[in-house]
Length: 123
Image (tube, rainbow, N blue to C red):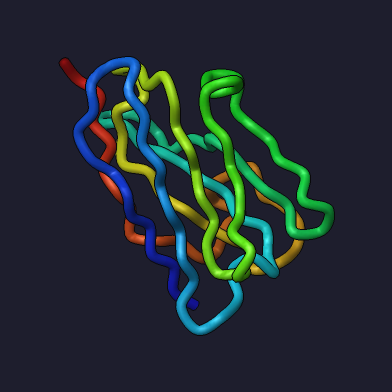
């Protein structure tokens, strides 16, 4: 099981980025996916999740109203649309899955991880 996250970059405060997570060798969207992030010197934290059981979405309070998790129609890619970015959003962003339909909020409960993509929000 391999995941690949992409789409990070440098953006000014208030800007937007869209991250993508693709599964290799399996249909990622058959399973729940979570986006996590880790800022320098901080623990990895959950950002957003989508269930494959019923398509329910969940967000950390810090990103609610600014980030949107979604999936494409081909079944292979999960996105994280990030709007109105703030300097505190600066981190390496990872996608992860338990390879089950149910989300796992805790990073330790996700068995499969992408390599991470760096998001830097700075003027």
